[in-house]
Length: 217
Image (cartoon, rainbow, N blue to C red; front, side, top):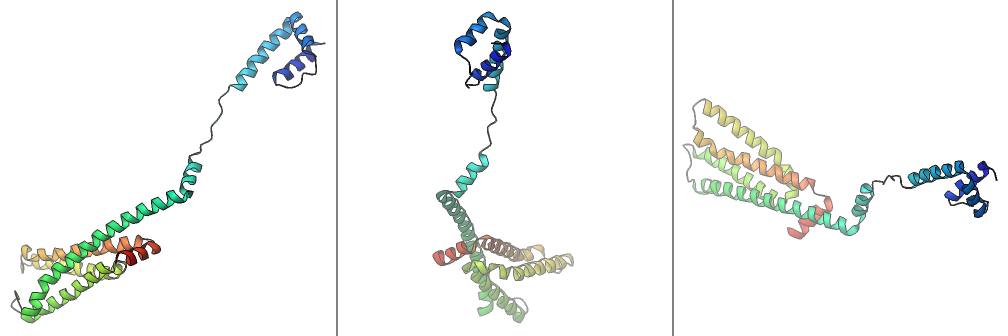
């Protein structure tokens, strides 16, 4: 057998293929041929390096996360946590809006019904008290039906801006004192609470909002 034929057969044997030559003939040739022995040693080294080289491991993060997201139990648990968080926040805002409305109503009703604490012009005081009562009722309705709170936001903000603007002008003209205008901060706080309540209610999904309304009142 020639060296070329032997090396082809040895290469096939290294690859796990049929060398198409008797093993005794190949081994006998290697015993008598130093060049082929050297070639086989180098071929074995190359084969070993190729077989133990690093293999690139694919990134399965996206597929694993997708599988978790597709898991009905995991999705239901995440949706429940999100629902509970939104519901808890909305309940806190509902209570805050209701408390602010009741406080405003408690101040306005005595002026409207009994004329307590009226200014020099009782008629103007009762008109302002009537307006405060109507506004308080609107805030109570927004707390009761938070999904409709967004409709009251423009009214609340216009009132807050007008009161703040007139207060600044009156203080600048020395027609009133800062301490007398502190009560107008309640209107600003009410507007902010109403905006937050409307925003939370708007961000909820329709099925979740319906479930909150029917299940929790």
